[in-house]
Amino acid sequence: MANATNSTPATLQDWVKRLDSVILPVPLASHDRVSRALNNSRSSLREIADLIQGSPALALSVIREANRHVSSSLTEPCENLEVAISRLGLKRTAQLLARLPAVPQNEIPPALRKLQMISQHASQQANGFFASRLARLWQDIHWGSLLFLAPLWPLALSDPKRLEDWERRVIHNGEAAHKVEKELFGVHLLELCQTLVELWRLPYWVAQGYRLLISEQRELAKVLLIARDADHPLRQQNRLDDDPTLRRWLNQPANTVLLANGLALSAQRSWVSPHTLRWQYLTSLYLQIPMDDVQQQQHQQAAQSARNHAMPDIWHPAEALLWPWGSADAQRDRSPAGPTAEDLAQWRKHCAQLLTEPSPFSNALHLTTCARDALAACGLRRAVLLMADRSHSQLRAHQTLGLGPDAAALNLVVSQSSILQRLLAQPAQLRLTPANHGQFSAHLPATLRSLFSGQHLLLRSLAINGKVLMVLVADQGGGDFSDITVQAFSKTAQCIEKALHSFSHRGQ
Image (cartoon, rainbow, N blue to C red; front, side, top):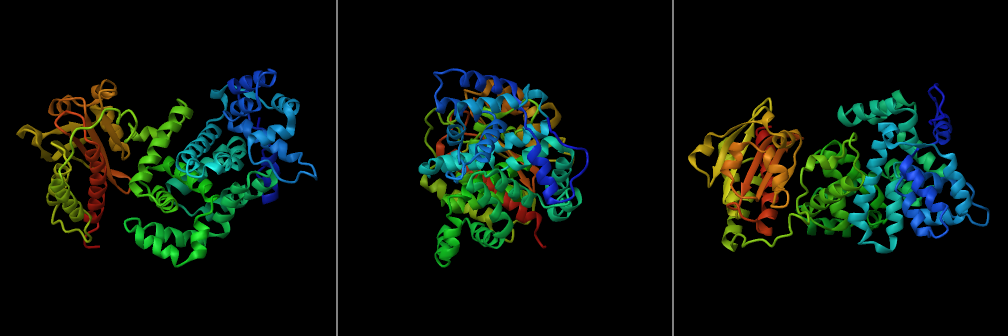
């Protein structure tokens, strides 16, 4: 399938030659569906295009083939699949399909399937965040985001070990990409991707994304500095107004492709890593929406991507979310009365104290007492704040709200609950409702279920630098939550995380 020699390319030209010759396999089921549609005279071009895009490899192959045969009188490259099929014609499209290897999906190498799933996740993020806001440009957004990582697909097929070594060393171990790429490939991956994008004549927005990463890093750094000031949107706007050139640079529609892929790629590592925050800040600034909204929408789009594209043997970052907060199912029933204006005033006061730097707390108990009071002020009636031990094998109650004296001695063994294991593995939020209570409640410790009667419950793990330190469990007395309480709970959790971070760095 890979059509690659065993020798390692030494130059950019050698790598381009090798990767350009790789023939990507197409999942057998997708190959058969498209073949039947092409042989059915009643199939419309739109229907055929929809079937083809179910396989990213097939979509790329069709667009590449169409762009390879662009005539001198038709110099514009194909920017989307329908244009590509129109230029090729159904007969040549069918001939191309016949040349591509059709392989059962589980026999396609995992490295390739993983990378293509990330591309599909990026396309879902792009459609969710940008397509409705820039409806006229939805085709550019969709195809640009789906094909942005396409130059790496043949590398994942022909040289998966080298790509996995790069991911381990750069993404997980934090080694310098420049050094690792020179050692593993002899060339920089961004330059290799850019060269293949130009050779294949992929959509202009894909090429623009690589140009930005390679030659416009100064502008990106300046924008990120402004984006990090997310708590002061007016100040952000004033800084952009003071630099019209930078504002125009930021507002380029082509940036949506890079933002979507940044969101999808960073989520593969962690939902709370600095990489994820960087792309969330940039998206928040680009769309002029609060960070809370960005994070909520990102989680929702990840869950939708998992429903559409997840595979049993390939990890999808939505698995770390457990249950997408703010989902339609969770919001189906109308919420009861929320906290009063006086309660919310107290809640804001407690949150402000949690966000104060340097940390005003003298010890951990002082901090968690403030956190408990903030949870109470946002309308929660029962809660327990559980601290993880060093080995992550146990969770012990550190603060309680509205529970009997026995709750103060609560000590949970993590290994006895799959939900607690997942909450401790990575920061996540789970909301129990009547619709999913049966699915999840059985996986909670019996002692925790006995403390929180009812079918409505919120659980959230909190972390510093990706390591979970605390788990919050709370409800409104067992009944449904008010919308404002759910929103305030999420905001409070973020404030507690920041307070934990500040407290851990006090005196430094």
